[in-house]
Image (cartoon, rainbow, N blue to C red; front, side):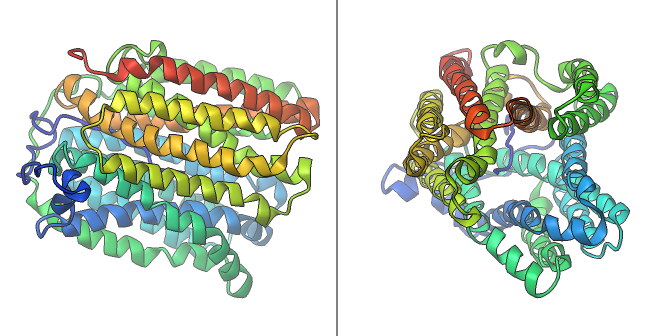
Length: 483
């Protein structure tokens, strides 16, 4: 649901030198302690609002398009093509994420902050005016490329213009930028689709893109010229690795949606054979072992996002198929989970001096408890209403853990060397995307082999609890080498 984060050292000669920012305020009120005057002072107000709008435009698109897609496919294609608009977006976002990170490291985030939203907006126009499935897929590819690069560029900008003391509050605002889209996006998209046309679900977001770009322009103008940096892990082979990863993600998505039969197994094996060597180029060294530092941060991001969002994807199915809830009622746990996330993110933003590795461990523990609680919901004999309190707990865990990981990415990326902000940001977002695609596919395979959500979903939930508990074990490795 939330956008990925990544970072670099704002004091190192990477994409650009840091823009002068006010020093941290004395610890008076909670808002001042979190650096809110820096966020909304005369020199930062437009930048902060622009960042929120950039995140909000992606959030509204994500929340609205899923609601409208049945009508889109009915108009332009058939049920058999239902998954392809999502697969096209996901695969393109992988390429956009990786290339956006390389672009920001070598040229600075300025051009990416203007070009990427415009690319996303062009995709909205192409998709919104589509008269064929082919045109819709072109629009989705443009949207994915733009969204992937935007997410990286935003975090590079945060590393450059906000002090470390203010960053927890920035990340809290970014989490909050998803709440309104999560609450109103699906019902508004449904009304617009039914009373007007699905085309407007895409086209209505275009003005937000324009306003966001205009508000970010002052920060872009203030950025000093980028300094050339060594390519390091950012050589031309990264482009090939990004394309291989995108194809692998698309293949895994297809296999997850067609989990029965030998073809799906063959596709999954080939996809993994492509993906593993690609990830060795695209992730920090030691990520698979969660080595102390930035590698552990990237690994934690995959575990946290994979565990939470996979359950988020299957929770409505659990409630509708096993317990007979309506679709609208089954969405309530997702809403209260989002509210818990936002509240916890806001709380951590008012406490910038707390240990982020410790908060991350607490966040993983809350997510583990929230997911484990669904073991009394998933079976046919389960207690359906228990999904509400347990998913609030999981949401609180995400608010603490995800925001802490965003902060730690900035801090640990600074230690990993010059010119790494975009690379590390892209790596974090990539593990986010891949873990979700893989684990949702595992859930699809379990459903196909057991033919019963009441049997498959408890197995899936139990496995995800193990992943969350593993995260509590590696959270301490996200601390710096000196701590």
